[in-house]
Image 1: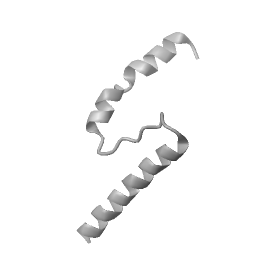
Image 2: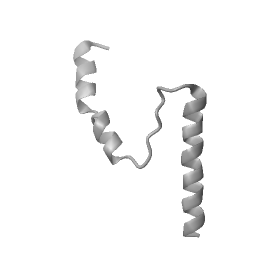
Image 3: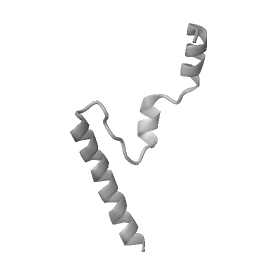
Length: 55
């Protein structure tokens, strides 16, 4: 991979701040593995509640 190609790919990506703004859920993967897993579990619980309500 050349630096030119890398910069081209990087420029085409949506900025992280924009992705976060659009997201319904954001999982912080900069934490410990267990903390990250707990965040995922929390999102899954929330999605389960939403699905139960819509049934």
